[in-house]
Length: 394
Image (cartoon, rainbow, N blue to C red; front, side, top):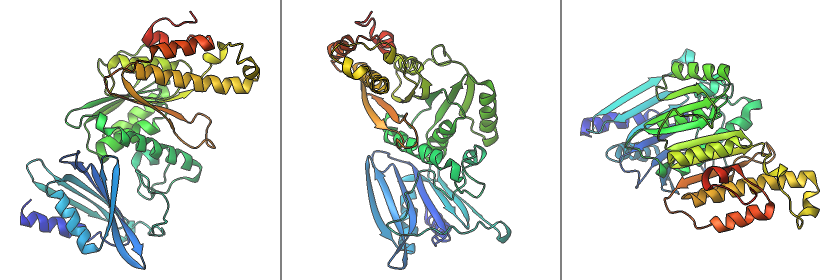
């Protein structure tokens, strides 16, 4: 970046450094192993306007507070060798600064005229302000507007706030597994049972638009009308790397290799078939939220556990937990580092478990333990038949 480009960049940034600023997001890092992203937001400290910088390095976040002059210099310096993109969102307009691999700088600034001026958001800028989401309230995201989660002004619809929180929580989990994806090539992602595709669109927007990853995302569902609408929206937004198709989980053969598999609320054993497909493809990342788990509940028999299993509700819940624990252990056996995480608060839905698995290559030596467990429960889980052969109950 030469001196003229630095001055142009600084001037573009300075005009947004006031209380109307929503955020400045620095992304597309030159070296993701150092800083993966940085974000600036306005902050009132003892009545004075400051701009808080949050730098993300691996799983650690570092913060510092700058005045307007320091903030403008910070953004310019980071775009001169560390990041290739700065996205600016403000009630007064927006800005986009791009730096090519050869160092050429492109600055695009769009202001709002008085007639189109967005109403200023009344948001306390303090250390105790409400949680900041990856997709922030107050900044309209087209697909969230069309899907009924946001208004055209960026306000989250009250009845859809739980969906807004769920989407952001899911993106936080995707953010944690970004090291499993290769930013230097196109990554293929399959979303089984995508439904209305809130999360499918969110993942594409986050990875492609905000983080600069090359992605090809395929949403798969059995409902033709839902697929047709999602495909229409994807084309309207110009999301060339996002497509939707009708089909079931077990029989899908549209790709040979996949980097990430997402399966949300696939009913009963459909989750097992999706996990097996993911392993067969050698997927680097698997994110799965199971649903309607009946298989083990209809099989479990154990004399010792009889006094517990006689209560239908208790047995049903235990069966669901055993199912997910066995799935996680089988994935560990297949070479995945696997976690069981809380997806969203229990008060919103009882189906609040997410299985997150990242391929690490080395298999866990736990086959004997798994087989002892299924023998104890007298069950034959689909996930074991798909990935480990016959089970003891057979």
